[in-house]
Length: 268
Image (cartoon, rainbow, N blue to C red):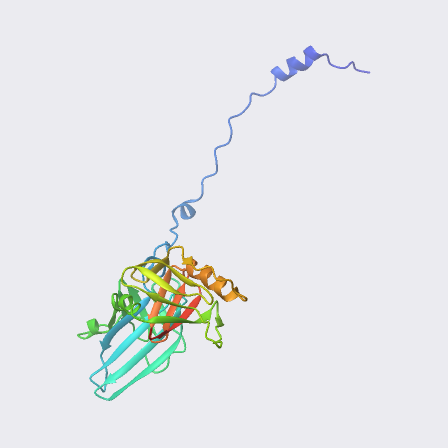
């Protein structure tokens, strides 16, 4: 039977073993994988432009003087479209629905569009009407196939009226007797005031284009039997950051969600 190796023998064998090798260099990717380009869609019309708002223009018409067009795009991807055929029919033709962006975030398609163009390229404060193939229209009248954003009208329309709440978080607000429906009024001085359903409130607002935020509100301290609508109204209004204003009324949004609050205008 062989004798077990002593500690000294083990150390000698270890010292005589093969020298340690250098770590292997990391495997480099092949040339195609290393140089392949990835499309960069981090900045596009959908996420970089202040595209929500009302656009107007008069586009060419084959058998009339022109088509007076008003197209409003909302942050929840809904739209309102009004077209009037000048010199032919003075009655506006109105449509509404939703729209979708293309994969590049530069072109919108009006869904369920009837008897009219459905594709628009979104630019800085402009919409460019595209042809049926999704291409820019060329020729002598090419510059007329665009709608221009209305940047100042909506801001002034906020003041001078009382905005009565009609929808809260997607639910219709019923009218009670006596009428305890919340409402608000915008002042020219950057102040807002109104009725929340039980208590009066007042505060400040900041507006820039279609960006709208409210400062914390001060309210009266009247005790209420049913304060659920009031509490939800005051909480929701503090979280909004943009709005839309068109023929359908006033709507408040948070980013690009569906409308959180909807109002209709009544005289103070």
